[in-house]
Image 1 (cartoon, rainbow, N blue to C red):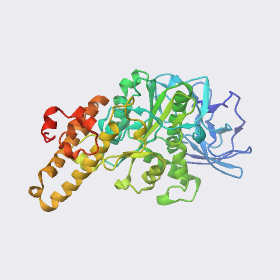
Image 2 (spheres, one colour; image 1 turned 90 degrees about the vertical axis):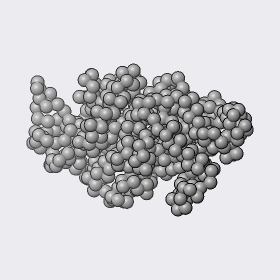
Image 3 (cartoon, rainbow, N blue to C red; image 1 turned 135 degrees about the horizontal axis):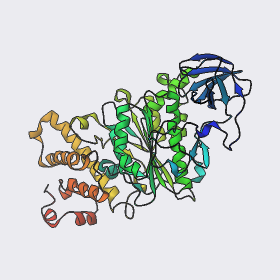
Image 4 (cartoon, rainbow, N blue to C red; image 1 turned 30 degrees about the vertical axis):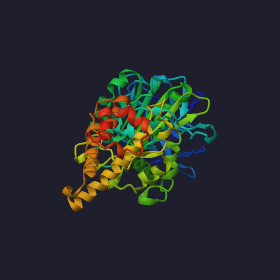
Length: 484
């Protein structure tokens, strides 16, 4: 938007006076002497020389990074190139960045600060809200319940995403986490109830941004998705704003419009690095690996905005994607994320090397709220038990594989070999699927039973007799389930 909602007061009031005493311009930073009180994160309008005349340069926008006595350090979103201290003026709006909220966002493609990239008009609405937002009041929270079906078997079967949950995807460089995030955004649903997706790309290359846009084109055309694209060459302060804009739009769609909204944030490591850079520009003392000491509370201020609210029909579910530098799960970003969120989906280099997509490591992945979203009337009867049996079998298969590397495959007994067959069937038949292949829940659960039939019935100790009778055919029961 050429004139974002943040340019005027939330009630449409006029802006404060201009300040022209600019003392320094360095890269994206502008230092101005302000006589009036100014606050951190305050939204700023920067007016170049002769702005407003025909053909003149349009206003630029920024955020206050630091205040010291009467000096304010402003990061200009569009950069300071071409600005001249003597002829540039600054307006402090007196409030944080604000955006319009409403269904006019649906079907739109915008940059990280809400300006259209799809050739359409600026997004407008009668209501604006500050993007800073607030976490949900714990006393008003409803426990997450009911599933968000992603169409990805590895997630729907074993780490089911639940409405109101925050479930991160932990990945590493070279793994297809962005493709998975875009696929989930393109396929996810809420069982026929009003559903929308807000996808925020953070620090993407232009090639990745084009790929995401192409994957989500159909859902954009159907008016079910909002796409915000912040690229690697955009200002870092914009990257700090982008997930907040996404969550602000999602909150309105959920709690005012009654929709179930899935917010996909990829890549949150790029966001954390932007927070670190802004913190350094502010001159703050660094913490672990130069990240600011408040990174935990900063991430929590985003993730805790999801959930369900008592008395309101909608929900906000968050799927953050983050890359672990050097695959280190103890790195501050995944480490702190794990304390805030309710499980994780972990991608594996080994599975990726075997050509499996998505390369999910089932034994490292977990959805702590899965049992609240599965079962009769939600997914299928016995879903939780089937998932538990698969995990137990895969854990045994991994032990057998490690043993075979020591004693050799010929030393394994028949049952051990069946566990190795189950592991291969799990990867090739259940997990592996096309990048644009949506799978129904029934298809996914049928594939789970196909994999479990690799084992004899005597090994399926976590499943009830009724479930086994319903899903193992007569020949398998008569033979003890040894078929495969």
